[in-house]
Image (cartoon, rainbow, N blue to C red; front, side):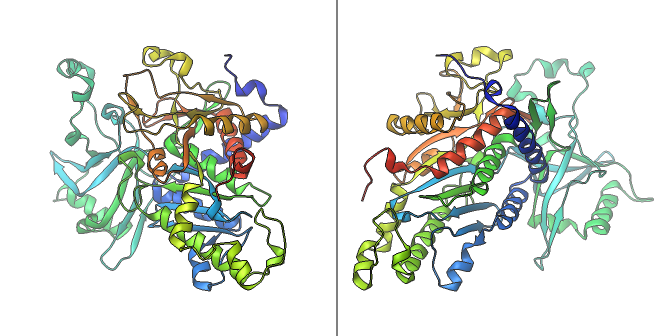
Length: 496
């Protein structure tokens, strides 16, 4: 079967649109190097597109109607956006879910120490990284510090501001280190951020750093106890290659898919038939645990509010203006209640809504790298420029711990992508028994919904600087938008 190349299928207008999209995406990456920063951007973009906080709908008591646009934000780190469709949510939603956290280093709660006239901040790495990749690299500090009075101080990366570094040993003295295995090459407890070297007159360097922190940020040493500071690569995302066909930047995993899912939803012009949902969560890189991860009840709770407020809105609207996919006819009183809900418990409607939903787990796939070809099986690898990637299954060691999508669902998606002129490819994460990985797909599949991983191929995955193809990002937005708008009744008998 011949592999397609998305670049060969884009016309002049589409190439211009792809460049414009990728320029916007680079700015999105630069402004959102932490999950908080990313979530803040998402909310800002959503509100400009007409989305309102779901909590406002709840407080108003008016319920939801087709065409409403709402979002739920959780702890400033996870966001779910709902474009309410014509069909009752009981009959399922079209969900695209991505994560907005990326591998990095976190500053410990008691980080500052001085050793031999050099001041460091102690770190703890987050997610799966190759530790040696973070040495001798310009690094930035981003995040928040919360003081005891709950004042939040934002730490930002500034254009002309200082950068930081984790030092490395010169090769002239590195013979002993060079003989070690890569996993033992760097001691994680030695991955400390160099932040200062100039002492106070008559004092030490740490006191000088503490004075700077107090003067510039109104932070004292104890405030680190309630801080959330992340060490990320310094600098902006840039075009990559002589032909500028790629983007190199920090956090493509998984903000490239998060951006594509968001941009696809916000760009929808017509009211969707099924409610379209963009779900962006935290903590995927560390197992999706915690209050802002996919294992939390955040999305389930938000979906429950949508189902409840839809039902409330339906029962108070003019019946002759509602169709919901059924023959449009005036209803009143008990007849209207039997049409939607049928006196069934709300919990059943919520469960039915999740069961009948379809989901794309929008996470990146490993791009084939000719420099490391033995770690891939070429027929079943993702390629830069090959379009959006479907991974039927994830996991490792015999698909353990992953999701495995059903062929019926894949067939529907094949038809959708072809009908929408979307270039797509299929892949698995590397050759068999060479490794593997997981996403949020298996968590959402626990509701019984159809789920498949569908994302963008990434070169250098989990490195400080990752690479994606501009063409793939463009195809992802096209594919995601087509999915949001798809009426799955065309594919199978509707579950009533």
